[in-house]
Image (cartoon, rainbow, N blue to C red; front, side, top):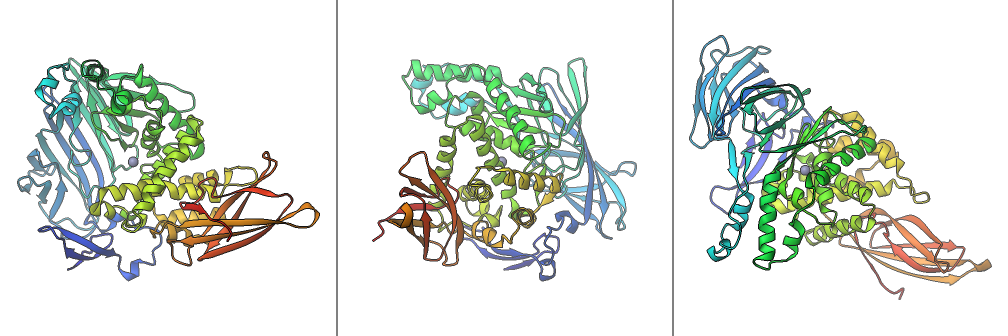
Length: 602
Ligand SMILES: [Zn+2]
């Protein structure tokens, strides 16, 4: 089936029926030929009937956590004659009324368990006309959960009886997107006012411009400062820790200390009552001051990314704990998993995780991916940034390379089945794990490879890479960027066409295997002639990469690093060396996402 949808960013789709029932698979999706000339990504909202101007939300969270809100959405018509407008709102939220402020109520329509909310305007607006829609709604937005109860779910009663029975208590926001009426999930100015019980801590996006307490109710007022599409808030029975550091804007950490005491009790009981002392228990058994550990990474990564990328967008940051195993970033606000507050592991994973979420303030929020194909500019860049931060803060190259190698073996194992990075979000529809592997981990590898290509092998100076990343951030700060836009900045800094690199690593899935062989013969004046050969496999013949080679000499204090092009089935190289080479190492800095082997010259 072909779909031609002029409102879609890529209006032509080829679909086919999937194996399971009504499932539909996207085979190909692309732009109209005349739009392909446009190398800068088109602003996706330009195809919507309305431009989303601003959303204003006034929300109340009652004592019992009942949620109610009034949202006023301002839209400008892009074309004449559109009467029905579609919003999306979490289906559990009931709409009480829809009106045009000052012009009476509006007809609306909703189907059960469907987030679509259709609103019929009183008249068909003319192109350029601005109108407002006010939606009053309420419902079950704030969820309640217990981490320890979830952990023990399914455990036999005789085991549960030996464990502490006081569960931890958490609230969470059920959806980070459709908790207010969304028009196309587009970016717009957002103004948020929350009334919530004062005993709870609430954090939201942008800037806190007003905060007051009336009786038991705390009112906070937040403005997005710039158009935002990732808009949410956090709420909980939190303790608050403020970090002030002259290098960075103020950071506030919200953590559920009571919950951690309950989780500690459970882990202690698992260990002492049931004798469970496995890696899981030891990894998560109590931190002395988790908020300080987490807060240090939040603050240090904020300072590090400011130094290497440029100034962040906001003048305050919140990091709030959530009772789940993931993290998420919003403008000026990050969610961090309960487990990173609980963990004591030293693998470097926690440092990567925490700083990954902070890195989104640069990649994903500071610079937003232009379209779904550019997702790696957010997740791959954030993952690379997390890895880079971990390398620096732990001063541990071994852990840095361990993570890279682990990702490499997974990427190589899946190379014949995965879609390329360049297919972006669509990969997630096919396989969530492959999406993560490609977008996060291979994406991080791609940046790591650029870092290495730009590394001065003589001085090990990486100023060129840092200057390039700063330039990309400066050019697109507060805007959207595509992979093409990034490629252009890379080319400006490297000074040559880099299409081959992006074709191989972003649009392709092949991962090379190099097999090195060499031998050295004495030459004149004590010199040696080194001959080496690299066989390249598992990639198309024209696949090319500059690969560093480390040459070690008899004097172990001495070595040389050279970079040479590997391409085609066999690459041969002859070098004149001033001394006898003893050890050769191809790709010593993991500069290329490749598997490396050696074989004898014969
Ligand atoms: Zn992320």
